[in-house]
Image (cartoon, rainbow, N blue to C red; front, side, top):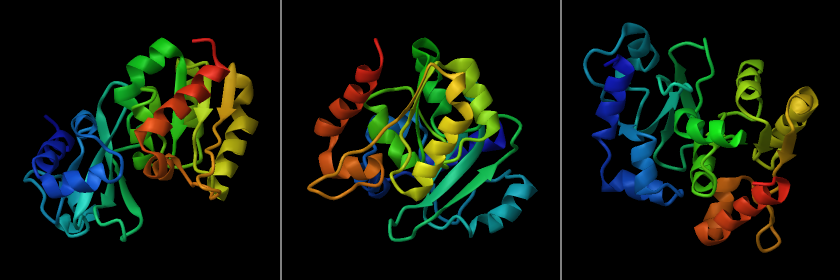
Length: 233
């Protein structure tokens, strides 16, 4: 077991009803908490952490009341983490990567089987955007940015024929979609920009916001209709 796996095991053991309720409020189910190995930390780390990580984390003080989201390769190896504050009023997030030798994304290992079988991928930006989409279509991955770098694009070219860009509806998300289409459109049979509808006449930013407005009852069929109307599954 590597130290990264030790950290996952330690952080998942710290999840209590308080953290579960915070995750439920953001569209994460108990099954997803288990599947994606979500944990939490509050200034405490397990023994045996390597010095570079201890320095980055300031011996745990930097990881003050945060969720832990393991980032994986296609083979299921944990090669990094994203940390987000449990308190939603504390904005921002922190990423730690062991290295950048291969794509390491949130949800990649969980989606890889259906990515292979469907030759399709649905890309979202943030980790909390992924969960409601994953209940609609399992081949969803969070790139954690609206910009798809060349390394990730090369991986997708090997795996898929169809790409759904489900990035945020703000300016960076729109720019990221336009950049992907400009650079990589010719490499795939389909590159489709998903547009999230307004709710009560007001725009929504991302899938997480849409889930909070609609819930699964409306969001899941909406996402599936976007997929099916563009393909012949």
